[in-house]
Length: 320
Image 1 (cartoon, helix red, strand yellow):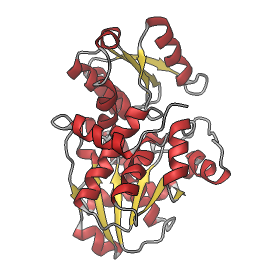
Image 2 (spheres, helix red, strand yellow; image 1 turned 120 degrees about the horizontal axis):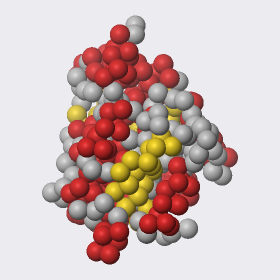
Image 3 (cartoon, helix red, strand yellow; image 1 turned 90 degrees about the vertical axis):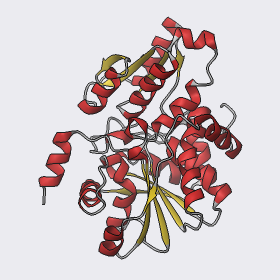
Image 4 (cartoon, one colour; image 1 turned 120 degrees about the vertical axis):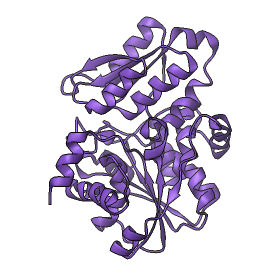
C-alpha cells in the first residue's frame, strides 16, 4: 500500500490549488433551517469548477506529473464528475486524457467530458470492470493512471474542501460527507481531525450502494455490483485500500439512506435553498431527512456536486 496522505499533504494541496480551484462558499439557508428546525451549513462544491469537488483532486495529482508523463497522457475511469475534472485539468495543463465511462453515465457529464477534449472509452458495467480497462490502457499506451479516489494526491486534493469549510465555520459539531469510493470522505476526515477534533465526521451513502457502511462495520473491504441508485456518483464497487485505511482511522460512522430521502433532499435544496444539487451531492441532507443521523448542534454538510441532467431534475421536481 502507498504511504497514506496526511494533513500536511492536504495543506500542500491547498497551496497548489490556489488560483486554480475556486474557494467555494459555505452557506446557511434560513429557509431550510427554519423548515427543519436545524442549524445547517452547506459547503457548496456544486459551484466548483466542473460543478463538483473532483477538480481539486484531479488538479493536485496532474499538476505534479513529470514532463515525460504529461506528454504520454493520463487515463482514468469515472461515471462523470472525476471524468470532467480530469478532462478539464488535461486541457488546462496540455495533457492528453482518456476516460473510461459506463454506457449509462449521465449525458450531461459525458458531454462535458467530451467538450473538454477527452477521449471517451465506453463500457458496459454489467459485463466489464472499469478498473481492468483503464489498467490495460495504461499498460498498452504508457498513460499515467489517475484513479477517481484511491490515490494519495487525489485524496489530499479532496481534503481541501473541508479545510476551507472548517476555516469558515470552526465550531461545527458534525460534518456529513457523501461517500462513493471514499476520496472526499477520507480527505475531509483528515482536515477535520486536525482543524476541529471535536467535530464528528459521518459518511453517507445510498442503501442501494452500501458497501462502505458494511466495510466500516466488518473491518474488511466489502463490495457491491453495479448498484442502481439515483446517486450515480456513488456507484463505485468498493472503497479503495487507501481510503478504507483512512476512513477506519478518522471517520466516526457511515450511514445509509433510502432513495426517497435522496430525492427529497434534492427537491428541498432547490425549492428552499435555491441550490441545484445532484443526488450524490444531497446525501448529507438526506441523512437528516431520513433520521439516519440525529440532528444536534451546528451541522456541516458537504454538497459534493451539482451536475444533474435536465430530465432527472424535471422528474424529481414534478414528483410530489
